[in-house]
Image (cartoon, rainbow, N blue to C red; front, side):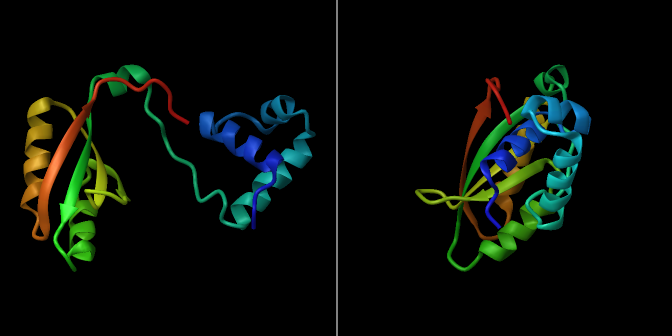
Length: 143
């Protein structure tokens, strides 16, 4: 199923704030509340909306150290490395990428020392050849 432009607009609003009432979303989209609710129900049923999550506030996020950790994996070790990184709660997301590195992990920890320890743990995973980290200084926007 390919979302329509109206579905894409609805998804954009939900990414900004999934807790908005159906009536508020309907007002923003210029649609009826019933239409918006049936679109949400359909998008959930079809798996376009896979769930809802919590996005922490800016003040809380500023108190955390976040980094993109680029990971190069040895041949044939990808499944084991992915499983090991999935088991680390500090790794919030993991993306397979094309280019010099194989994976990009988003690490989120309380302190710089904790980030140092996390990157050491990732580097010690069997099958990881090397890591490179970029600490995130600020987020300009997020959807």
